[in-house]
Length: 401
Image (tube, rainbow, N blue to C red; front, side, top):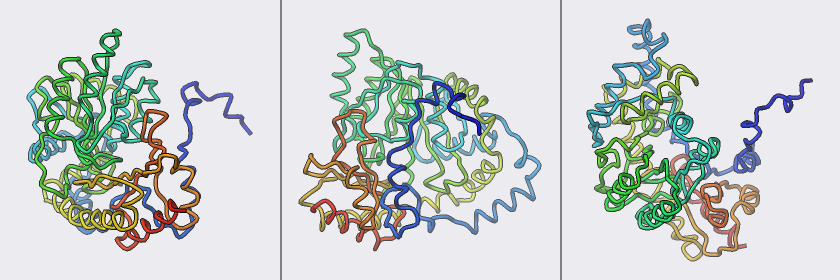
């Protein structure tokens, strides 16, 4: 047999299997309550209407929908997306363009590949979305974590960090944020801090990636401006996805950004996969125009609000004396921080799985080595409501032992 190790690139040698995914393999084939994933509840999928749309697309538009398409995306679909985000309250500037990606994960991958050199400074929230960290690490960025609180990223601390780095002649290339219903913490950045962040981006001349998977189904009527709307200089790259509001299997995401940046992303994507699946783009175009996306997001909003309330209620009943958390206004996650900072939630995962429940230990969401070991991310979108409550009860027992 061939010894693959002789042929592996230096870049690939740096890849490491996710410790979390390896641990969660222990749950395979077992009757486990999973609070670990980030899956939508299948009940939100509008299978009948999507099937009818898919059939019509093949029969009526098949010559185009089953063919190759431009790297930027099908022109009519890109226009539909622009209208969709405008309706949602996101400003599309005259200098903006949009590129369709194979999910928002590819959007992050393309951004990293196109913009980040080894050693470039990338600022992230702490904690932040794990898959984004993995992208920036792959491109050997120097990651700087900024703590969050109940109002999102501490932009006052960010400003101090920027001053320190500028004093040493160091320059930030990129800042990555999930400002609304953040993954993993669930917190939402206040409008004051959003404005401050845009001011700092202008003053210190860096780009901002606004990752926004969750604002389409918020549970509370909270007023805020999107970073993309506040930006007048073309610094914000807005990325989002249909995975949470239509179906992840369609693999449709997008980046809305300054045309000069989108041009670079287009060239980068050409070398990766030529274009996002044409068929999926046609399906989502019709789903937008025929109200399927809006209806799916509405169902998700109501269902996930109930599930969030069940999880928060269970946490208050079973863990209020041993942990703290922020009640999210949207999204799919709660991050719980155990009061005992000597507990390492990764070490307790095996024990929790043995008792019938899985979660994601929080350490991997942090840049700093000394942070996050006593945290865990809990998902409420996928499990049934009774399982959410039972899962939290079991976790309470695990961490009290």
